[in-house]
Length: 114
Image (cartoon, rainbow, N blue to C red; front, side):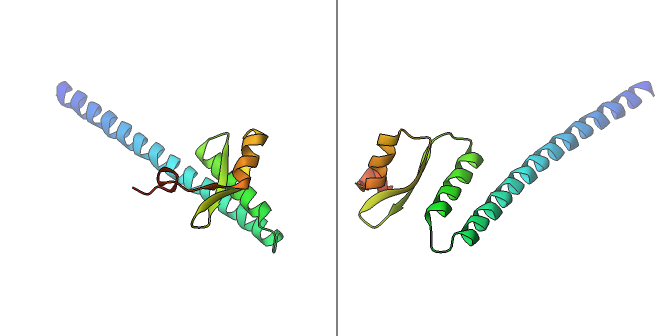
């Protein structure tokens, strides 16, 4: 009888641990989704407050992307079919950021083509 109770107790502990793991996983997923939704709302707020001026929108998009991805440096670039050109940069050395803003030709490796 004691062995049966011990086994039942162990089974309950395992089930409880699994439920706790699933709850933590779902909580992390919810928190990540909430961060994305908040970032989207903030970017849309910038869009609404900057009619006709895309620079603040690009900067907000880049800042939110960096925050969500947990990176310190980056650039948001446009591609015109031949060249890339940075429209926003954060955390980059100014001379490098200037080079990216001036644009550079796409190559097979930079355009993702195979």
